Amino acid sequence: MSINRSLIFWYGASLGDLWFGDEKARELSRASIDAVADSYNGEMGCIPLGLDMGGGEKGNRIISVDSLAALIQLLSSSRDLTHHQVSRTHASTLLAACGTGDGAFHPCAYFEDGYFRPIGQAGTWSRGQAWSMLGLTRAAAQWGEPYLTSAQRACEYWERSRQQFLTPNRLNDPSCLLDPSSSIIASLAMLSLAELITDGAKWRVSAYQQLDTVISSRYFVRIPPPGSHAASRNKPPYAIFWGCCYKTHGNKEEMVESAWGNFFLMAALSILLGILEPGEF
Image (tube, rainbow, N blue to C red; front, side):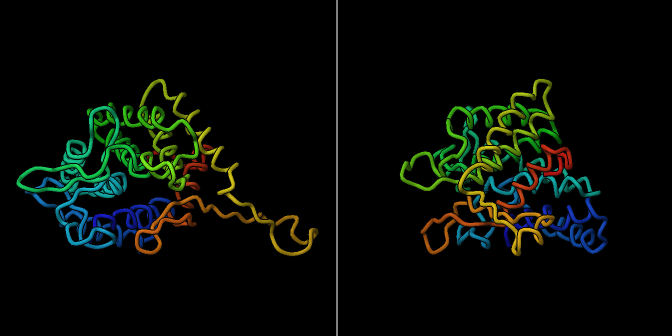
């Protein structure tokens, strides 16, 4: 079991229902809400990470930032208000367990002896910080404060700590790989935040600059369609986004193409084009 199931069920089945009215997707989404909510741990005040999908043997005592946005979206779409309360309690626990007050977030925290102990240095793992930013904007959209202030601080911390739009995977390891996919998730969070405040133009500009840098980088490769020039003239070009830092073998990290990278890049660009709304992510 894993809380990361919420990523699959919200961005997969639930959006299949929301965007296309697919009945099977709707049934799967509703079933997933019950399954995810049933994993709630009252002692911890959250849905723990779980043993599977990378959680490991201590996963049932860990709270993680990765799935916060998807969890809030998924459970808050339920017709059962109990699920809404589980979602809000989880968000409140995560904010207290992983937040620092200055906008930096620990990627996870371990529950022991009745309280959470943060794991890792706050704000250094770029994708974890971006996940936190996105999750906080969804919490702010649902419940307002204190999540709105926390979302703004998290986005401000991102800008203070990451001067380059192509951010490193970890700030505390100068020799490590970059992770442009984290810039995409951060951009999506900024676009979401811009919809929640009166002076959101700054965050739209920041999101655009980061996305423009990613698209212009070597991590986004445009490939002409096959065939002769005349035959391929009206065919759209192919593209590969391989700017996702991921552990492929043991602790070895490599740059890869990934489902989350392609999906969130599509989402952010679609929002800029006015095709989709930030609140769906």
